[in-house]
Length: 185
Image (cartoon, rainbow, N blue to C red; front, side):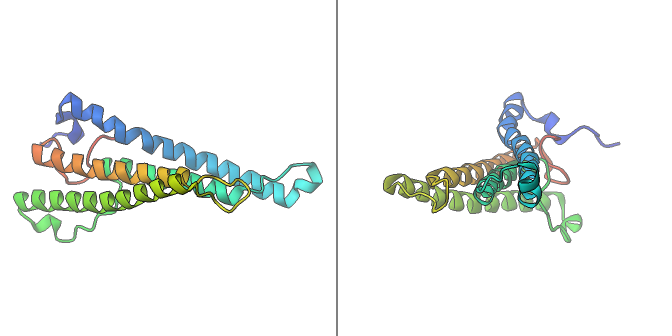
């Protein structure tokens, strides 16, 4: 009979603590999606019927909702990876030997880490350029561009770290890599 507990219960205590670094942004992303839904609903209602009942519109809904989506999407990447929420095409996976499955899982995690690290590196270079030239958005808020770019940089950096950590956890035997990986949400 197989062990019904999550694979992460075999992990050492420090690994479970490290997982918290990847889990809290996922919960934050969920809260941001909820706040965004209320924000968008309010603004739609205010635009439609605001003049009749005295509701002011925000006039910056597009910009703020874009920043909120950037937080929610990119900061949720590491959470999805650690909890097995990313899409996985595994047509051949059930027919592979155990060692091959482990090797394929580790390779997939390392490729994910490399991709996320390259994207994060490029984003952080944009952040440096935006800080140096004091670039701002061309909207009502005139938001310094390093803020939304930094949000994306943090998200992709967390994804890269999460992928490396998942590869290490698979190699160390803390996780199997099959099914849902990491901690249970």
